[in-house]
Length: 123
Image 1 (cartoon, rainbow, N blue to C red):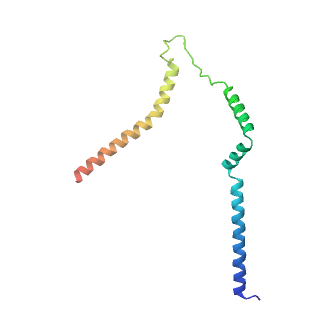
Image 2: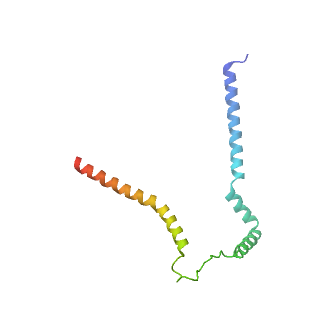
Image 3: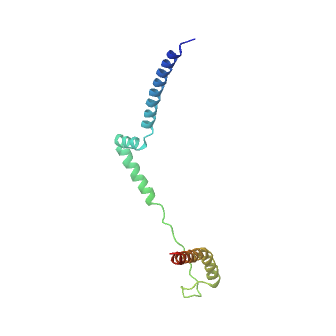
């Protein structure tokens, strides 16, 4: 059987070599996946192709139609009032959203005042 000290030395040498190989591989992978650097070099190599691509992309984006907002006008109203059915449903939705917010605010204010009054009586 081999001497334990020689085995230890050979193992540490192999381990150090493997670490150096892995460090080299990691640095190569980092260089390969450095997107900003690759993009910069690509633009420097082919500036005309990138300029044409940018112009074409800008032109295509400018041709996208604008989003149209639909506005509904009811003939029986002055334009400022909502029909009764719509008005009730919107107010009930608004109230269902506002109720928890209002109750949380009121509860917090009550808690602050009770806490303040307890500190004044204790102090």
